[in-house]
Image (tube, rainbow over the protein chains, first blue to last red):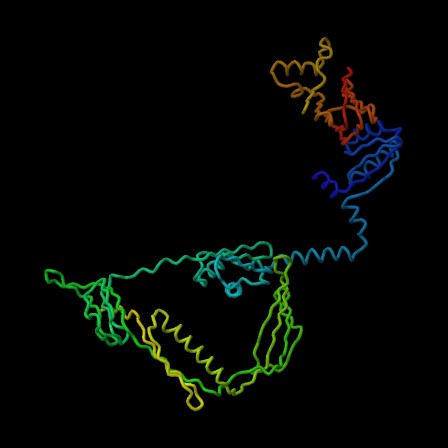
Length: 388
Length: 105
């Protein structure tokens, strides 16, 4: 393989001579210090090959000794060059192609993100762009170590980040961080107070002295468990009070939904703006005028790929929808659905860790409004640690 | 299988030529023949290839027979489809199916 490549690069000439002078020819060649190879004898002639740059020497040398050789075949790179020497276009084309390839290989055209956690790729790409790694940047300008550090600092969920430049592809690898459990500070002294008005059902004291008993009604901010303890000898000392105070509580939710509401609607008219992103350069294909504030934008980007490899070419469509502000009159069903949605939202936000025992609903239509008045009787922990 | 043959040993002890003296020196100090003296080196790779270094001339080149002169003797290789793979000032490579090797002194 190596020998064949070497011969192709330097070029070879296959020639033939008359079979009568075979031995004489071989001995002359030996004396001349010219290397020949692939010497094969046939009935009428002898065939041999010589490297391109030694052919003229061998030819003139044999002519002196009255041996005439005939060229059978020429092959290799020098002959290919000779063949296409006059075709300037092809040579220029090859040169331009090589130059383009070389210039393009100096840039990063694609960014791949591999991470073992649920991260939005676009978010990581945006961070990478902010810290100086984006499609179309010169590879020389990339400071891998600082980029790795910056990404790691900005992504709080990551434990380590590595950036590898592989040809024109930048591979960003992100490993997730395992947060250690939060350490509860027990060193400081504190009391337990009530978070809201309630009636105590059960109070479980782990540390401290209980100031209320089961069945007591308490107000918001009232002391439930004191951090002061008196031992059997009558000595007093302070602790970090710990307790659970399960109590009956009451939550109220009031809201009002208007029949007539302002909504922003799409008129149906739209304008499309197309951009071709070629090697980091944005080229507008379709340009639209007259885009004011009354338009909503939707963007779709199509990235061209070869197998799983992203090409530095993408087509983005910006669709601008015309919008108008209308006053819409909702139907009863729509109002009820909206009310249900709001109540669910309230429960999810405020009554998440609470057991609802009883619900009083007093929802009604009043004039042009739907009034929500709901009361929830619950059971929950009202203990809140407060330092002193 | 590789076979190494260093030819041109003792031909005529009485004449005591320079090469013969060298041969005895080599024998005395216990080095292989050809280290100090100049002689032809023949290396065979099975019966498919022969590398000859330090030959004088090619006497006969046929498809079935190749005869090489090494100065003091003639080495002839018989076989089928014999050809010279490479030829340079000092060495040559013969390839083909070698069936017989003869040293004619």
